[in-house]
Amino acid sequence: MVMPHKNTSPSATPRLVARIGSLVLAGMLFYCFHLALKDGFDWKFSSEWAMVRPDFQVSEGQPTKQIADFVLPDRFGNQVRLSQFASVDLLIVNLWSSGCPPCEKELPSLAEMDRRIADLGNVALITITIDEQWDDVSGYFPLGTDLRVLFDPEKKVVEGMFGTEKFPETFILDKERRIRARFDGERNWHSPQMFNYLANFI
Image (tube, rainbow, N blue to C red):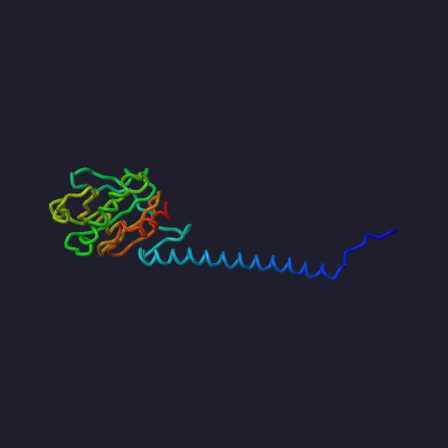
């Protein structure tokens, strides 16, 4: 029987080694590119995180407190329930008080954020003050405002449900009205970084 002749020429082995080497090099370059890209995303996230600065955030799947339905009056005397926002995927709740300089400082930013999310439909913002009535806080809005301002002078919601004693404090609630994040103190609420951050919860 005549056996098939194998090509054992001296030039075949170097070509094979070169091809394998090229594949290994290409794999290493792809891996390094992947790491660099990942580091870039991590850097962006860290950079935006530093600008947003949440004081508390719940990891995905981690148990967290659910806010029960409540009812508070608005500036017009209407009784507003939390459950009225059932169709909203993300609810931002800002807690504040008159006589609080950081609260006053961030109100324009909240108002601008509210204006920009008004057409989204799946995100809403409400503010709750521990003041008695609209006359106590109207001076904070010399040009008027469309912000939803609710009143909780007995602190049944502010302290009883959210546990807030210092202002301002802002909570991010998901579709089930579970607390996903908390911000202590004032923030720039209408910044691109904040909108990018909030988009992660929708």
